[in-house]
Image: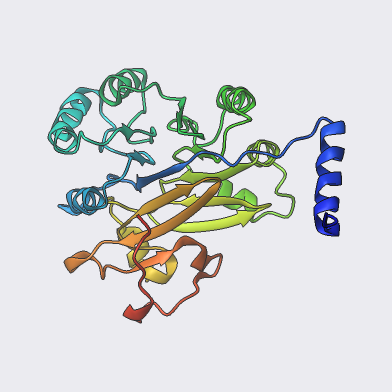
Length: 300
């Protein structure tokens, strides 16, 4: 009989050692899905942009859609109900996809507007959900502009209860993390929790520009405008390189891996550029933005 190879013997000994220690291989998450992320619609909604974004999303057939807040213009309790009502035909047209909402400051500014938001979105102002083995936590920064102690506790409890899920995503509207990540310490509770529980992405909106930062393997991303005005940035001379362009985001999750593609809208309001999110860093786009050959087709 042929003697077993040394490699086989080493493998067998390692397995025996793991078994003796009570260790076992970590199973790869059973994920294979795609979802779309919509940026702010309001803060001065621009005609037809939001509808165009939805048409492009629909062509990709996502498993679900999630936004980063600011769906209605809001600000006045007396007109909020009509503003939500005006959105219903769009959602009815695309109701074959689950839609998850994140509350923005244009959505919730008072107790009345909060009740309307929860009624129309059919979600509480903070909540979480699973999709296959992945976990999503949606938080409410609509009025506080950052995570309050209540929201931080909800996040900590939720991540602890779902620590075996993966990958994990955190959504909330205000990207208060931008300044904190650029500080010297980077020691703040959100980042500590994200690091402790192996969060993959923290995703916000509000600023109407695309921003991406990576710290300790955690991707922080501000999804820009999917219809909200960008006048203030454009007046300052900002453009695509500064993250000022109408877009939406496509995420592909396979196992524990997350691939993200950013899609600029085409037509008169954009040039239809696409790029991998990792090709955008703190200096902006790390590709030739005028070279159409560098456009990519997002994985489906």
